[in-house]
Amino acid sequence: MQVDRRSALVAALGAGLAIGARAGATSIDPVETIDLWPQGALGMPTTPPVEAVDERSSDPGLSDRSIRGISRPRLVVFRPAVPNGSAVLVMPGGGYARVVIDKEGYELARWLTARGYTVFVLFYRLPGDGWRAGPDVALSDAQRSVRLIRARARDYGIQPERVAAVGFSAGGHVCGDLATRFAARTYAAVDAADRLSARPAAAAPIYAVQSMTPSLAHPGSRSLLLGSNPTRALERAHSTAANVSTGTPPCFLLHAEDDAVVDVGNTLEFRAACKAAGVPVETHLFAQGGHGFGLRLAQGRPVAVWPELFHAWARAQGLG
Image 1 (cartoon, one colour):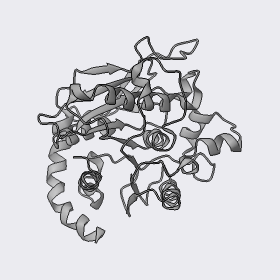
Image 2 (cartoon, one colour):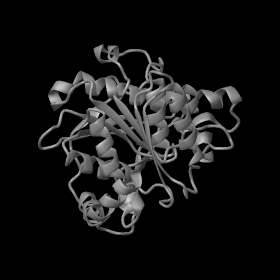
Image 3 (cartoon, helix red, strand yellow):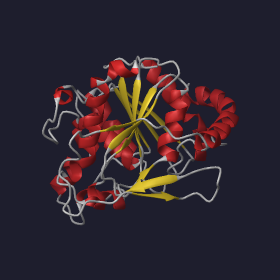
Image 4 (cartoon, one colour):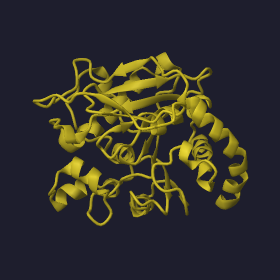
């Protein structure tokens, strides 16, 4: 049944995504930004990181920016013309060395906004920059984001209980961490928003870094998150499958089996943990797709159907 649904959608999506990715890349960037921390980011390193944006594309019509040295964690807001009452927190990837802006952030945000979602792209702090929270620093930003979105739900025409999370690659680890450790006390409350729940209504880790054990981990993400020689206890504490519980929200998982960067075993391990805990989980595996395809690099292949699969699943969860 899944194969039939995918096949029916691929033909319709191919041309649309090809146009949408290029058009989205040349759109005016959003101007609405929410700073996560009213008095500045907590636990600043002795030498504060310096933000820098790198353009990785040689095509002047198709931007592929990434940002490193994030010192001002923030949400960039995409408002739909007609809100459907649901919000999506998007956490781009970047191997915990950077945050990818266009390919795994703004392009998906524009796609979702066109379907009524209010989207918040998170520029989260990077653990290798020396923040006091260490491996919990990105999770702190994700928790704070969900709470702020809920606190300001009326301003955006959304229902506070309808906040979903999507993450790619290392951002998928942030997403999985949020889905499993939403209640962890990773920072001291700073205002009334921190009394709200950080549990997303649904979570979608996409070709996600999940495990920190050497056999499955993405080496670069593991090193930046945990250091060069972490203990087994530390590896387990930050392997998302080990933290799945009955409180974990419904999850949508997506991975290409030919991913040479993040082993598909990360997704399979997380899925098994969800099944064991009785957490609703929908899983889509594609034979081809590689890593980091987002929307633009999925074009012309069966994996191009994934945004519509996610959208259909989100509606089934009461979102959209």
